[in-house]
Image 1 (cartoon, rainbow, N blue to C red):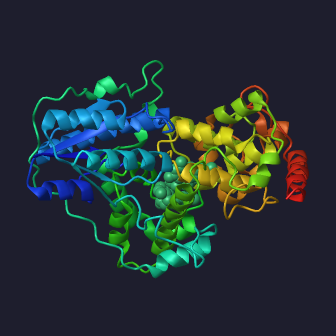
Image 2 (spheres, rainbow, N blue to C red):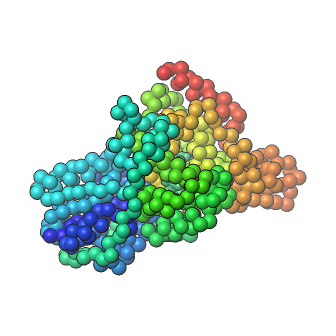
Length: 473
Ligand code: FAD
């Protein structure tokens, strides 16, 4: 009897343990993607992720097609759709790769129990993480809350498996199933079509991910440690959306880096380690996106300021490095990590707006929106997270801009209306004397806003509020 293989955020054929095991059984394979927006508590994907998903499914469908299998698409509750797929195909086995978001893991656990009750085989495999979050434990048996010992625990586990070869060919099940066409999933924006910048920036899918990985190793890895904080240059891998959709696995990345002992490779492995740490935190704290990891932050008095929130979302705060980041995000669906930290710090500490508003905006607009990395990083910046930035670290957006984008290359790329400012004013346009604006068509307050808050005053305000909740511990 056939095997149903469920695809979720593992949209690949290479290093796909569930698919390889199904092909190995020697019976027909029914490959199935279910867009489950109905199961309670499973977070619906944001708009940029849906755009990515559409193209990734298209690519996966082609790749599976070449190997001999159809990719069936469906919408609905996972358990109900799987039951229909079994009824249609007569399958006796359902295989999938594990998910670690607790609400999704709960769906899979109940699916497994239900299938086994009916005497069917249900098996889950690894693939998304190098280390199962349930198996890495502190000396006292708990979970890790600090990165350094977590990283050490990971480093002690050197038995990282090799990537699994793709099946040479798949005997695809080809019967009748009331599936949907890709367009029926309604994943793409209609009017307005805001995806132009995304199309120009990305090649979703497994091959796009492999090309990024190899291009990065050849061209950028050697300088990664030195350049990764400079948003104006192409220095990081931009693998994040490929990782978020499981088009590439950390096993494949580690296998490519295995021989490299360079500082760049070691830093890169450590960043992949942060991803593992975020998942470890999410696995043990299901409501990471909704609840402060440190409960004392529940007493925080955040400001309710919809106008400031909107200025931040649109890249109109008057602080060029923040605005450049927010516009890069809107246009391309991605933002450089250094600028993510600066923009997040600005929302939380300069505007005193609850980090959850920022997390939601990123969730909707990032192509790499990730159930673990996004909330863990927001809580890290807010200071409410595990192993978080100390509360008194408040990024100065001007000094950060001058340090990491000294010639304003990044700012000019995303905010052309102030592109003609001399370098010394590019991160502080409000200080530019009239003589340096002459003939440049820059009208502060008109073509580009004046700062919506004074950073010095905002910093003092944040310190007072943060100190007050510290006192309440
Ligand atoms: P590289 O520097 O090439 O790193 C390689 C990979 O390591 C990344 O693709 C990512 O999977 C992982 N990684 C790197 N930095 C981090 C980090 N700080 N924490 C966890 N994993 C990391 N990353 C996401 O993947 N999805 C998100 O939704 C997300 N939201 C963020 C929100 C905020 C406020 C901040 C400050 C950071 C966020 N990050 C998120 C982490 C980081 O910014 C991105 O992973 C990184 O910028 C992706 O670019 P890259 O692939 O070129 O990174």
